[in-house]
Length: 302
Ligand code: PAF
Image 1 (cartoon, rainbow, N blue to C red):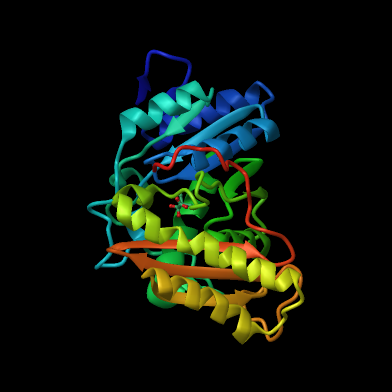
Image 2 (image 1 turned 45 degrees about the horizontal axis):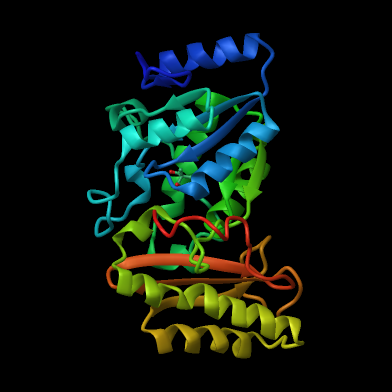
């Protein structure tokens, strides 16, 4: 089934319709980029789309809230779903094809005999409090790669652990796709854009600004010569706790392995997760530089 939106973007909901549209693009000689999303699109997603357009002739965006990556007590049911608005935004950005399958299309009855299970790097950071999350992410991303067969797939670095595990999957399973990871997009206050930011009240958003500020303080301390992991983590911890962010983790890790760094070095990543009210937020900074600044002037929404 293919759905007309009144503009240039083609919307498909089934595997045969997707394969047909991809086949047409391939026969026309197009290089294909995929931007996987769960919808509730914000400027961060749209920057991924722009990046995909620079790297390919034919841009596919998938919109699918993947139940497999949500734990039983997580926000699957209340995860924002804004399909009409998402399609309008993608049309403005000249996306060629949107794949928005129902759950039964991605996980038909009888499916589930095989999943992609990460062997390393999935039980630290976000994985420590979200068991099975990255199994769900890798499984759906592998399925999307199987369906779309993109030349390149674009992900955001806000989800740093996710991006590293996807790179590892592609490497270890010899998947013929280039993984491109884009900088974090922030609003004017520095808060990393996330679909979950819309849950924050104005006061909670103020509190949440402690996350980029504490990461920035850590990055500055590193640039000033601090290499002690406990002291750098402490800078972030104290900044978050003072503001009222409930810290889930503050870790400094080596990006390739996601192992805790013994000593911080250029390229180590300081990653945090914390709760403001009931909203869980994540962010990170690569030491040796400052916070990503891509999008410092975007609206503080979404
Ligand atoms: O980052 C996300 O939005 C999701 O984890 C992804 C990659 C689309 C898989 O469902």
